[in-house]
Amino acid sequence: MDYEIDVIYEAENDFLPDKKCVQALISAILKEHGAVQVEISIAFVNDAEIIELNRRFFNKSTTTDVIAFDLLEEREDIQTIDYEYVPESKTETLANYKFINKTAEGEIIVNADQAGKVSGEYGNTAFQETMLYIIHGLLHILGYDDLETKAKNVMWIFQDYYFEKYVIAHD
Image (tube, rainbow, N blue to C red; front, side, top):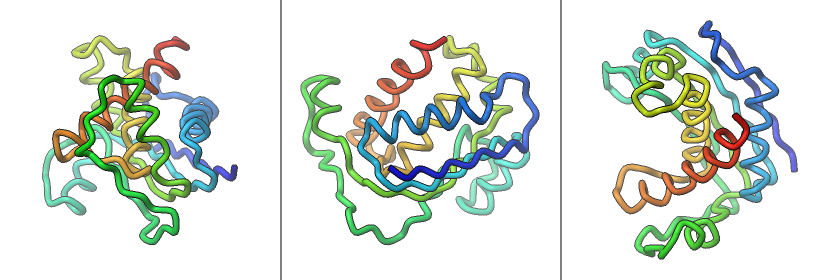
């Protein structure tokens, strides 16, 4: 397994996870998913920066929690997810959808300000909310999508699973 995980802090918030924590979370998910070669950079930014990125790349002048850019345009091992298959349970979803891509390269941009603002609304600490955004961005880099309802359901099952296993269980 060859994982290169860069962490960049452009926002200054006292709840942000340190570099080792971020790398451990991402490495654990990649390992469990069966990834073999991955290059990812994660940047923690403020609201103004993510609004600018959202405007520049998606023509939206609003804030968002996380933006993920898949930089690996051609994959030898790419597989598509059959979102028409409806799993009976969370366990069945995890068993049937791992792993779609063994290589990945991308950037995850996390809005630290947003994590701080909304953390109480969902019962998470700002730290937990930040880790959730990292998981969500990583799943996009690995090929998951949340634009259609069925795809979103599959992605969120993985997101909840990893959040509970690697964040909630360790808090």
